[in-house]
Amino acid sequence: MRQKLARGESIDALPHGPQQDQAFREFAWKWFQDYVMTNNKFSEQRAKRGVLINALIPFFGDMLLNEITSHQLEQFKAQQMKAGVSNKTLRNRLTVMRKCLSSAYEWGELTNPPPKVKWPKCAPARTDYLSPEECELILSHADGVVHEMILMTLRTGMRQGEIKGLQWSSIDWQSRGIVVRHSYCDVRKILDTPKSNRERYIPLDVDLYEMLYKRKQSTGYVFLDGNQAFNSPRLNLRLAKVCEAAGIRKITWHALRHTFASHLAMRGVPLNVVQTLLGHVSIATTMRYAHVAPSALRSAIEMLNPKTAVHSDFGQPAVNQWARLTMKSEEISHNSSGR
Image (cartoon, rainbow, N blue to C red; front, side, top):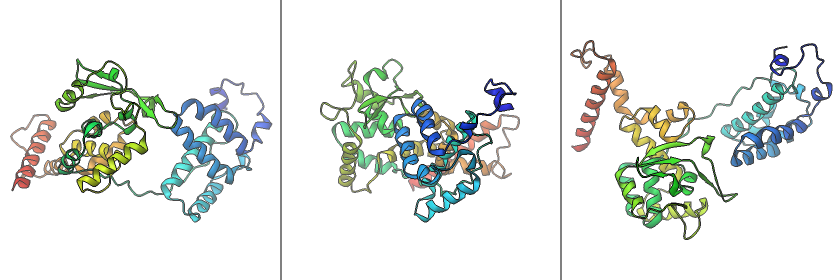
């Protein structure tokens, strides 16, 4: 009754029989056309189409929507695991399935709420990042536009597509910052919106500002491979060659973004600020960098110890004590490393 009221239907209206008898295969493609094609970026559309074709429709295709239960979902999980599918991939496929069934319920195609999903456990993602010394090493072995793109990523944390799609018109010379509003799509060879369709502002440090100002233009791509935009294979190859020349492990372009975030966390920058600079929708995504802030963690523990707690600031805001302890921990850490 609540669902009918939410859809503006009469509570006396009879349910639509043909919709209830709809097979998953039929509804899945309807959902793809009406929801995915409308609300998702091209890369997400390709990914969800692949999930439907390769996993969900082969297993659930002939089942009626109202016949899909938690038991069928567990059977699907068992089949996928037997086939060697990783828990992370399985979780992604179940996420698509869950959203599809939720849409069916919202649209009145499914009479009962979607069955509950017991999500497979996934090991925490490992975050690979460079040390400050490795950053200097890799920059010293890169030249030209690749050197500039590596420096840009290390100092702004922009995604590869955002770096490739950066336009001169997106640089605010007066406020010395970048408005990230584009991302280059390799497949369609066009400028698209950033991930999650959210623009963000990133300040430029002195090195980046001077580097860009030397070849300032009014329009066009900031970074070009000859006379055309970079694509991922060519850019990844250039980075691999730089790593080889520098004598360090082969890293992905995304590891440079991880390096930016990790170094900020190490220096005590609040994670909500890191989240804003990276453009993460959820702080949960940014929390992967929490473990690299030992000085902040130590300050938190020392706040409870009577021997190390700051008594002289009694009555002052706790954040002042926090800041002082954090600075003290960083000073001790710096002195230790200096020895």
